[in-house]
Length: 303
Image 1 (spheres, rainbow, N blue to C red):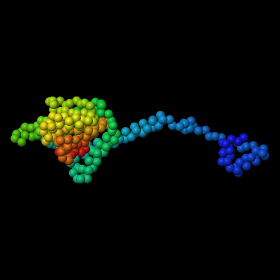
Image 2: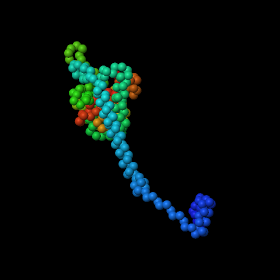
Image 3: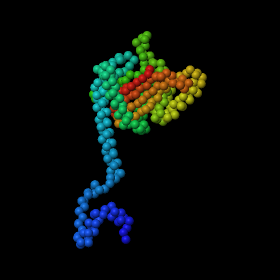
Image 4: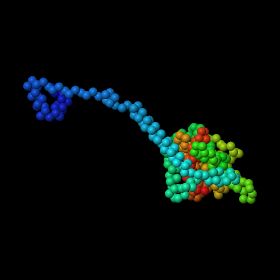
């Protein structure tokens, strides 16, 4: 009795081929020997295992990472070769400013900006989601806080063999020349407590400064707690009082580089004052040994 599978197979063979086969059998013809099956190497016949796929992916990612690191290093070298220094003098220790005197045209300035933004993009793309729990991130946070509070300033990143230089004061900090004499006067901001909101951290090491010169609010709800405390202590008594604080976010680390965003909002009654508030910046840092050095002020805005 023919099975369903055999019937289907015969139907697919077709009447012509089936009739020839039956006739040959009746005539006593011997069936043609089957063609020898070509041996297939085991390595080709076996399906790829998940471990094989993972190994290929890891290798590919390693190649991409090396290429990104090489490009970042090449862009840094190009950026430093095009740069020079503006001598701001020694009075009140203003620090040095990296400038690009050979790129004074609009096209030249745009070209330099594209180099800085390309470096920033590599660090952010490769390092997004990186952990901020390690000592490098904490050292960088301490440096940023000290710089914004007028307590300390980072050094500029320089080419090998070049003497490091100290940056200028940021924001409204730093000493200013005394118009009535040869001395220096502290900035108005340097006399106040500087408030920080640091969403990506739960604690920090404060720079060496007289307390309560620097205070901070941590975590995603740091904004709310800073506003609530200000309203309870100051805003409820003086509705015209302004809340000034510095937001340190985002912070992205990758290899020996880091991108840090800083904003300086100004609020009154929970509403931001002005469109540009007190300004902000995006900084690109490079680590030398255990020290973070400023490579580029990628962009800045506001006062």
